[in-house]
Length: 291
Ligand SMILES: Nc1ncnc2c1ncn2[C@@H]1O[C@H](COP(=O)(O)OP(=O)(O)OP(=O)(O)O)[C@@H](O)[C@H]1O
Ligand SMILES: N[C@@H](CCO)C(=O)O
Image (cartoon, rainbow, N blue to C red; front, side, top):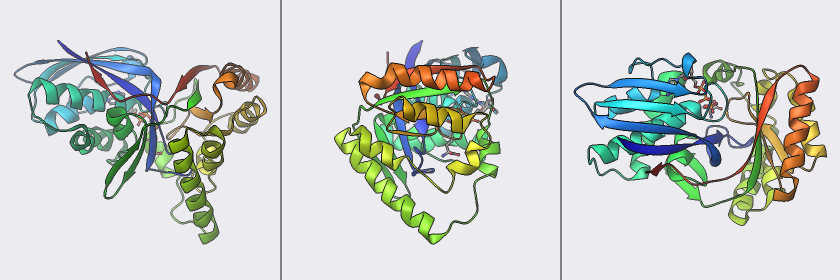
């Protein structure tokens, strides 16, 4: 079978709601495909018992449909669903790259972004591209109306995933409909700072740019212990902390030398509020790869 490894991703990064995303070096989904008369999906791995194998309800199935590429698809989940680590997007991006190759469709990775986003539309109601873009292209991505821009960054990160489920669909319901002009001005400044920080692989600038007054405060309410975990990470040396994607994952930017201490502090802080969690010491990585 043709095999693709598709990385977890972290969307928004605070100031870039529905626009910014980064590929993570780990964890990842492994998607295997072979030609078939009709699409079937077999799931295994992290949280796979909660993911429908019906192609009409699975992000990989939506991609097979969009590419008119029926296949037997096997997905080994490294990324638990409803995590804020782009679980649904990893399978969609992996399937898009794999089926494009299997059927010789000849589409570029950029052209596959809107196709993989069909999978996101299936599960969250909107075809936002901020997870599938980095999952396909790697690095730090800016998914805007006019297309995706990619920066080849490799900043160290810690992502802590509590044993809480927050679905993207639910987390989108708490996003405010309006924002005060001064908050929009603050967001523009922070988003610009973060973008420069990514170009320079500068943890301080990226950390400053991860602050957000508009979407993150509403989402933080859905994550038990968020404020405590954020404080603990900052005290341990994180340069910025925010909700990863729609949550419940929490992401910290940092220097490599502080990663281990930050991971421990975040785990302890979740533990203090009675929530089990696991931490990934990772960095911004590349996009999906064919094996
Ligand atoms: N192949 C798939 N992998 C993961 N989740 C899937 C897949 N197909 C369908 N789903 C469904 O998508 C939902 C998980 O997607 P959701 O967007 O809520 O989480 P996420 O991708 O981990 O988070 P985020 O987008 O915030 O990073 C679950 O309801 C799950 O059953
Ligand atoms: N930008 C999306 C990412 C989650 O899939 C959100 O925050 O809702």
